[in-house]
Length: 130
Image (cartoon, rainbow, N blue to C red; front, side, top):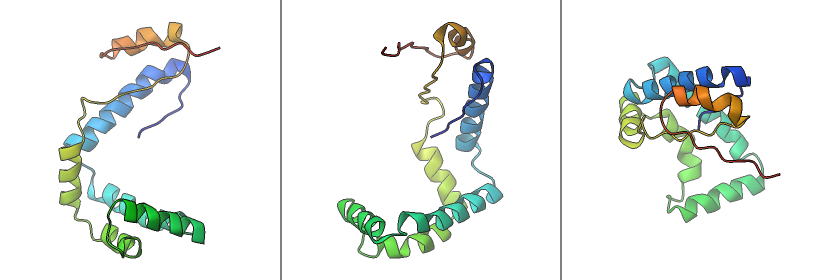
């Protein structure tokens, strides 16, 4: 998931930048330093997913529901550390499509729609409930 919170006047330009970066991510893949950062961030942040007995139990239940091996939680960090960058890039290309991106923009349609339509693709306006 990509997200941004630009001013309304910058929404279309920001969306164009996000789309370009998403396309680059899929077609060119992340650079080695970007992958290293993502790997380290994933490993470090995992501690917060299991920091209490309740969270650890929840992770173990989820792993069991997904038919993961019994040691899935215990070996997660080691498996992330061992990921091969080329394999990661291949999986990204295999499972993500840069042309199949759904975008949600929240704001005043009268000011946003013309700029969003100029980017190309369908624009559907959904009125907010009062």
